[in-house]
Length: 229
Ligand code: SF4
Image (tube, rainbow, N blue to C red; front, top):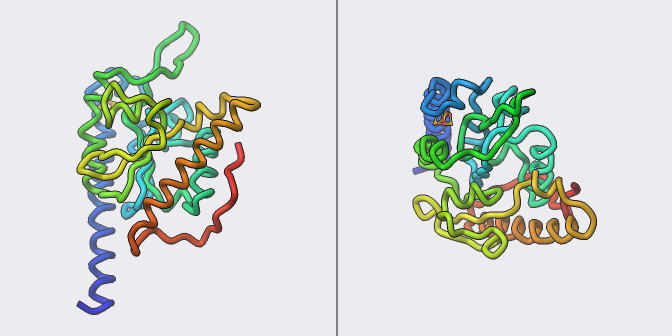
């Protein structure tokens, strides 16, 4: 096979993945399997490079994500982008999704508030996440926050004790969990500095995992010493 044929195959594979992701997103948009499917404004399927080496999986959409139909926007999204850039990964080079595709909410009598997804909602939505992973076949998965990590690794997973370790994720894909950007944003002072150092080590481990193979992702972005909060 010459280089041009290989490139055509790559382009064909990319087009195939993009089409399958778009079709899956339409299915998700019609889904009303959970009650939150009828309450949400927009479904948040996920977005990014269909050939991404890294897939990032958070917990669920929040208010801004629900309004825009995009994952990780707002302050947590901006911090995530800085975290990824710190290891030379522009947001557009990864694929970002959540364990549930609709915003989990409760009504406090004044307005809808964010809440964690229930186990039933996560179970209902899991086939969509599994399908995404099967289409993308990323080289590594970064789970953000305990709920996301537990959805892959089981209820006994401890983010405090097992954060930063590599596990076999779906289909044997290496999976590492770290703190959710929204959690980091709630910290201050020395606690924030300590969390940043831990997350920075986790991010460097992700970078090293992606660099293990010659075909690892490349980036025009320079690595920077540490992400800013
Ligand atoms: S959370 Fe997932 S399974 Fe539940 S309604 Fe939304 S798309 Fe469907």
